[in-house]
Every structure is written in C-alpha cells, then in structure tokens.
Amino acid sequence: MAHVHGDKKKAAEVAAHAARSAMSGPASHGPMMGGMMEHMMGPGPHGPMAGNPGHVAKAVAKGAAATAGGSLMGRLARHPLLVFGLGVAAGIVVYKYRKQIISTAVRAGEKSKDFVLQQKETLEDIVAETKEEGEK
Image (cartoon, rainbow, N blue to C red; front, side, top):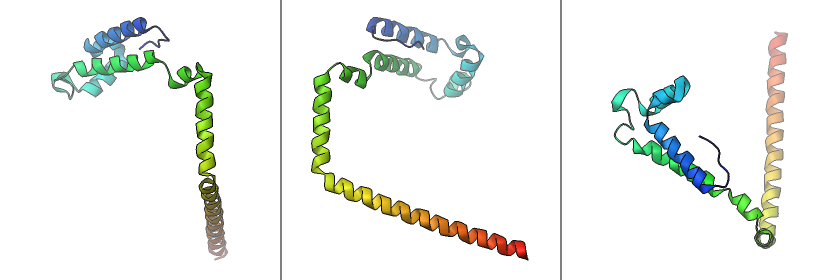
C-alpha cells in the first residue's frame, strides 16, 4: 500500500485501490503476497475469512484513514502553546510526586546492586566448581 501524506482524497483513493486489489484474490499480488494471502485466508473458498471478504477491505480502509489523519506529534508540533502547556502540566505532576519518584528510584538502585552482587557470587561459585572438577 502506498504511503500518503496530507491529502485525504488521495488517501481514500489509495485505500479504495488497496481494498479492490485485496478483494480480487491472491493471484493479483504476485507469488509472495499470494502465499501470504492464502495463508491468512486459508486454502480455497472455505478459509477463516471466506464468509466475510469485506473484512480485509475494512481493515485496509481503517489503516489508510489512520495514515491520512497524520501523527499526533505532528499535530502537537504545530501548536507550541499546547506543547508548553503539556510541559508545565508534566512539571507540576513530577513536582507533586517527587518524593515518591525519588524513593522508587533509590529502591530500584538498591535492588539492582543486590542483584548484581548475587549474580557475582553465583558466577564465583560456578568458577570454583569448574576449577575443582578440573583438578580431579
């Protein structure tokens, strides 16, 4: 499916074309896509999606509509005041919960140190056992 930027009419045309080609069957997609489509739809007319061939067309149309809408970050970048407001809101939340954030980070650091020490001891035990077996 073609990648479309901006033009919603073009995105709708691409989605319609993709839906028509998906409805026409696996043979129109070449050997690789044909195999994938046959795998998805099952061999012959009794596959899992055989009763509802519009399912594939709907999925393709939804994907094209999502692409045509643009990304959330792209829309936010056009509104710098909104980005500033989100930054202020995030700062307020971090300031409000700063003590809990710090204590959680400290606990995570302590647990990671304990884990590293435990793994170091386990490795030392394995090395000692290997040396003992090598001496015998």
